[in-house]
Image (tube, rainbow, N blue to C red; front, side):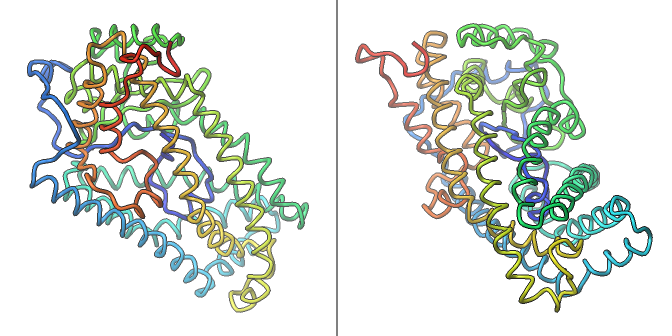
Length: 446
């Protein structure tokens, strides 16, 4: 859960707040199964019994290698993003774009329409080496099978969405700064809350379909849909079949994935076609039960509340720091003050650093939510699936093997970057959680 959508560069991602929560159960990396009747191929073979999360020697080494690349790569991306912003300040690109916008019009609205897209596009282009590196590693390890032409088109669409949202936010930010030099951070925070909520609502309806095809699962796999409807009834939820979607991922990715997203009229459960091709129906039922847990346990509103708190602190700390930073370096960067368009890269430097510092806390909360969802998935499938703990462990084993999930992650990696529990821990929990054998009941499902 709690994966922000799209593939924004770090500064643009920070500025765009949370385009929305795009919850995920897991990600995977392996060639997808050949086209076949959904869920038919894996169901023909009896799943092997799982006693712990294990990988073959070859895949173990590959998973460890990928984990090292991912760990140092994420640290490298953070420092690269900060360096790029500092170079933009040193090169005085902000003042150049500001002067250009001011020459075109004296209207602040028109100036924003010129300055914001140009500075955000510049940052996106300067950060494209990290995006290309991520795609290259993904292809090398079999995570992505997307061609470079298709990837470039997705990157372009992502940029367009980011420019639209980023421009709106920049307009609001600088309107708040000019209206109240001392309380702009609070007013901008207040304005960001309905924007975040709106984006969470709109993402599954508008943004996600730009990148993947979505079809009601009932049209692709009626039998699986019937099994999931039983799960929905068992969970006491009102999610009709038309809100359970099949997503076509196989043409771009080898990942196995499922997630919940949206609320109200946009509320839905999404299962990737690669997951259907690789897992048995009972395993998919557990995966969906996990996702159902996010709704039943109110993780989406809790996540929005967490984002609100994080941004409150982030904007306040940014407000406290930006004045001193510009007092020392502003003249050398050609920045007139906080209300100057050219101050935006300086604000983004601070927001990027502070958000990185906050990452361990938000990830720890996310891991807790994901653990709760695992527990809920075990409880809600207990009476639906024979030996449900073993089935859940098998599902995670499939996810981990395909995903090359690290079998022995280092503590620093978990602390800094893991927003889900480590795969060995998830498998172990599925195999040991059994309150019913002692005459008890589940905590969430009785």
